[in-house]
Amino acid sequence: MNLNIVCIPGDGIGPEIIAEAKRVLNKTAEKFGHNITYKDVLMGGVSIDTYGEPLTDEVIEIAKAADAVLLGSIGGNTATSPWYKLAPELRPEAGLLKLRKSLNLFANLRPAYLYEELLEACPIKKEIIGNGFDMVIVRELTGGLYFGERRTQEVKGEVTAVDTLSYSEKEIRRIAVKAFEIAMKRSKKVTSVDKVNVLDSSRLWRKIVEEVAEVYPGVTLEHMIVDNCAMQLVKNPNQFDVILTENMFGDILSDEASAITGSIGMLSSASLNDTKFGLYEPSGGAAPDIAGKGVANPIATILSAAMMLRYSFNLEEEAGRIETAVKQVLAEGYRTVDIMPQEKNRNQSVKQVGTEDMGKLIAERI
Ligand code: IPM
Ligand code: MG
Image 1 (cartoon, rainbow, N blue to C red):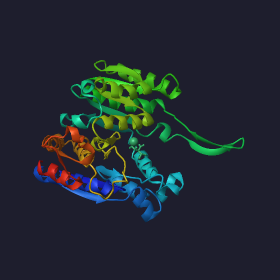
Image 2: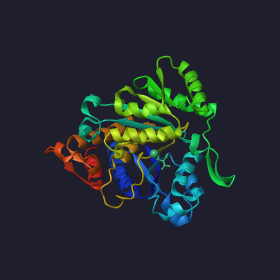
Image 3: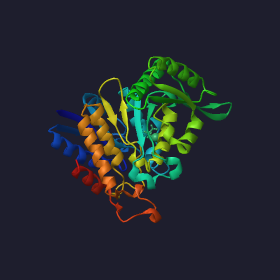
Image 4: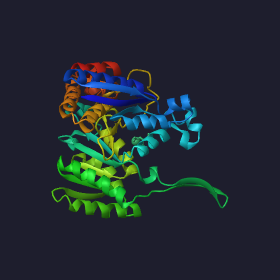
């Protein structure tokens, strides 16, 4: 099979983690007789430095023409980087949002599960964690506060900023359908998260989700208010299967979910539209503090590449091979620094490795 992949290494640790994902993809392609063509393009801070804007129209067109996009990370230190002195629409994150919108990537899937090997890295007590957890957060990605009207203006002599949280029926319905479809292939439970006790957008959200649920009688639907969900994620994460939620809530809850998997460096993601096309990226940021040091965890990016093989290319066996290789390397005791157990819990078999070695170890086991 021919795979046309656009790569956006981006900023910070992006280039380092993308290099390892490519290494693993190349090994997989070699083993299974596929042919991958990569095209590397710029987005985020590096694009600002080169073209004066975080995402050029040319890059959007290149991405549209590909089968899938593999993204590292974008952005820098918001307190110190000159990128954050620019107008908001010229900052690195604006490039990512524009790309999501231009490609209509409304469905963001973030699977969060606990590898038994990483039990020691999970900050939650063992008696709460029990047999671990395995959930997928289905986050709406092209609506809500991220894309509503916003402005900063003077009102009665005082500077006032406004952001708008808006959702249409259609936007809610299509993401709900995705969540229920995914639930059908899993444990058949959807937890829809909203703030129905305060927000109109949440009241509409709940109504439409209930309508969609009628089409899936085999799936149990439960509603949960977002603050309670934040609490439940650390009190009893095992209760969740599919979490369906709007853009901003999903952004926050997915970081929380990643922390209980051991590290944000473990959380992969797929952003999908209604076609086979997808954008695949780790859920974590550019981590400018550790960029260039060779210590970043490439696993989330490698697992995102596996999701790409599964969702954009239907290569289930190949995707599974990558996931098994990750598990194997963890079982053998290899850890990047973010998933190292605390010293008192470390046994002999645990070995700390850098970004490149982690990538090589996984590639070798494909
Ligand atoms: C994420 C990130 C982005 C988001 C940022 C970089 C704009 O936090 O993918 O979760 O908020 O969506
Ligand atoms: Mg986020």
